[in-house]
Amino acid sequence: MKPTLQRSQHFIIWLGLLPLLLALIAYRVSSQHVESVEATLSTDGLIRRLDELLSTIQDAETGQRGYLLTGQTRYLEPFLNASEHVTPRIAAIKAIALRSGVSRQNVEELRRAINGKMAELRKTIELLNSGHNRAALAEVETNRGEAYMTQIRSLIAKLKDQQIATFRERLDLQQRRQEELELVLTIGVILGLLLLFLAYRFNSRYELERDRVETEIRRLNDHLESRVMERTAEIEARTKELERRSAELQRSNADLLQFAYIASHDLQEPLRMVGSYMGLLSKRYGGQLDETADKYIQFAVDGANRMQALIHDLLSYARAGTQAIDKTPIPAEGIVERALTNLEMAIQESSAVVHYGNLPEIEADETKLTQVMQNLIGNAIKFRRPDLPPEIFVTAKQEGAEWVFEVADNGIGFESKYSDRIFQVFQRLHGVGKYPGNGIGLAICRRVVEHHGGRLWAESQPGVGSKFFFSLPLATESPANESHGTKGNNVTAPRQAARA
Image (cartoon, rainbow, N blue to C red; front, top):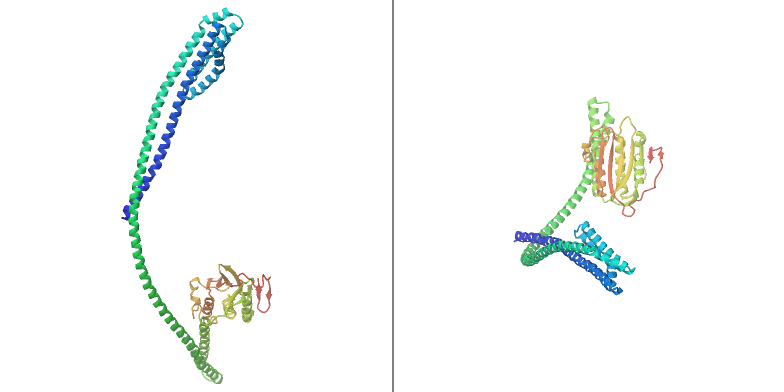
């Protein structure tokens, strides 16, 4: 049914273009018909004006003869009227004749003949008025006036015959145009009736199809509602299951955290005991045993110390993702200054220079974010090049609805393929003992930043330096507030920190 309706619709659309085409044809035919009628009327008007002109010349000649025979001036009235109107009528005939296709030469020949005739009539009347009756009669007897009149009649008859032939041709053309226009109108009427019939049929089929589609839609809606109810019930059941599992996971996480605390406390005691007794053993028997024994004792002491450091770092990592954060509006510049205070000894030993300033006010946990900043700046100092003092830049810029902080250094850098690995727990790019630490600091930083609703990532190039970025959401109250304004260059002696 649907393809049939579509074909019918397309057919009616294309058929609907035919009235437009017929309208254009009708306009063209009617325009030609009007032009034909106007041309026919123009030809008819020229014929009538030629008859009027001949009648005017004849009236002028009749008035002249009456005046010559009677001498009474009342007979001059036809001549005087003709003299007044003959020139405008010749001009009107000339204009119409040229538009009707009459040659200019024929019109000029007629004008000269009429002017000659009027001059002849005027001369005889003037001779009679001056008392020269014989001269006037002699002028008439020359038959020049008759010759002019014969020429005028011949020229007018010739023009009339041409215009009558043209008039008949234009009448025939007008009749054909009329028949064409009637044909186009008849086709238009038939086409309109056909369109009405097809529209009625299409509308009837459309109503049937619409009823069928509405019935199908209602059926599908009923089916969809039942499916939605089923899916809603499934989702509710799954939601309850997820809530139950989430509660279990929370209890499990709490139990694991408690276990971690207890295990770390219980582990640290024997480790401290091992370290303590190994220290005593080293002090009391150092030098009394052989060199291998001293080396083994030192290995045991170092292992116990590393184990205590690992347990401490694991506890810090666990707390970073589970402890609640206390967000307060704080200036980011103050966080950097507290981190630099904590790193004061490392800054002095390495002659590091830290540039910072124009940092915004943010909403964060001051203690935890200070830990992040301290770790990033500390890493920049730790992984420095041996031939170049560390130079670190701390900047921030707004991107959308968050602040993006950047900590850039001129250190040893690392391969870009390790950009994700460095944030994993206990993942080190260098051997144990070459650089201090257990490889867990950046993992703690990422957990703290993500707990604040942000991100932490890095870019680096070996031998050039590294850039660490972390984002934080804008402060809800004063998102664009910059702490302390813009500070000039200032190098403080204790930590060699330049504020840009």
